Amino acid sequence: MTRLVFDHLTLWITPAASEHSHDLVPYIEERTGASRRAVLAALRKLQDAGWLTRSGTKARPVFAPGSIRQVARNYTLHGLQEDLPWQRDFAPHFALPKHVERMIQHGFTELVNNAADHSGGTSVTVSLRQTPTHVQLLVSDDGIGVFDRICSAFSLEDSGHAMLELSKGRLTSSPEAHTGRGLFFCSQLADVFDIHANNTAYQRRAWETAGWRKGKPLPRQGSSIYMAIALNTTRTLDGVMAAWSTAGDGIAFDQTVVQLRLLVSEGQALDSRAQGRRVGSRLAAFKRAEISFEGVTDVGHGFADELFRVFARANPQVNLVPTHTTPRIDALIKAAQAS
Image (cartoon, rainbow, N blue to C red; front, side):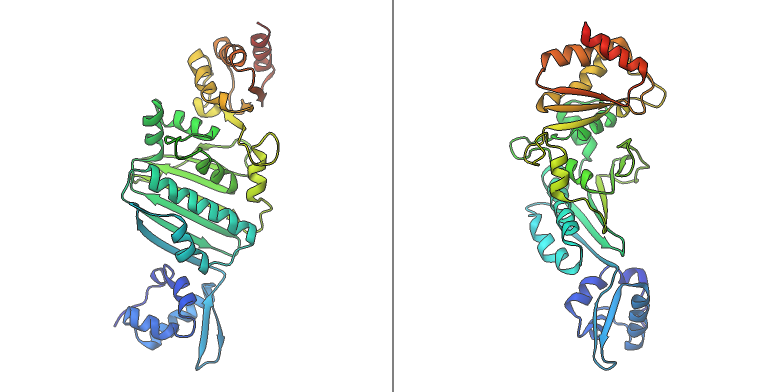
């Protein structure tokens, strides 16, 4: 006799309840080979846990997805069109606030497109889960890994430098086809955002002012991107876009924040001109750049001069705005600007 395992059922019960609301019991019997008694017992457990709701009569029950929902699918990347899985396999089975649905749709299509266009892999697994408080998206591919891809495309030394460039935004290895907005704005939409790739991980929490920090990596090849959005968030897609536009209209992506802590380990100083040039890389594409010294204890004259005099004079169209500075760092920046 087939044994129904609760955790296995949750992997596919949401679309099953949507598509077989009036015949869910015989559908599960046929799909699993389990007895009617076992199926009814499993459905009661799923109801109690919040995975299903039941209406209708005892003889003719009508089931529907509950407050907890999940859909997981695997796709071949070759020729994948990211809008079709969303419209066909995912969107019909979730009940999200409209502004949250808009944000998670944006994240879904951008992350699946990134896997198709940039990962160099063969397949991608997508899982979307709704709980009473959050919607959670996980996109995992078997490709080269996002940090290795960036290092290769931009001749960078390590994943820390790759994360620094990624955190600025407007980073793409295919400028003829992409603008570099996708992964950046996905991270800004989320309350929780994690990037795992080839034994390296970085995470961002919306409520933490420090921004990106290192996380505990998953032991797997390729990239896994996780984003979670609270169902009661006041954040909107248009609002997030507007926050990175100096005009406040969300059209241009022309301001950014550079987190200097991504360049150094804890307790180390930013001392070299090479580090200053690394910070200034690609900033000429922006009108305004906040340079956040949060987590940086000290800087050297060479770094300050390279960024706030050499770069600033070569790129007067970029407004460099230092933040979270100490009195000493302030003094070094002012001395460099006055030189």
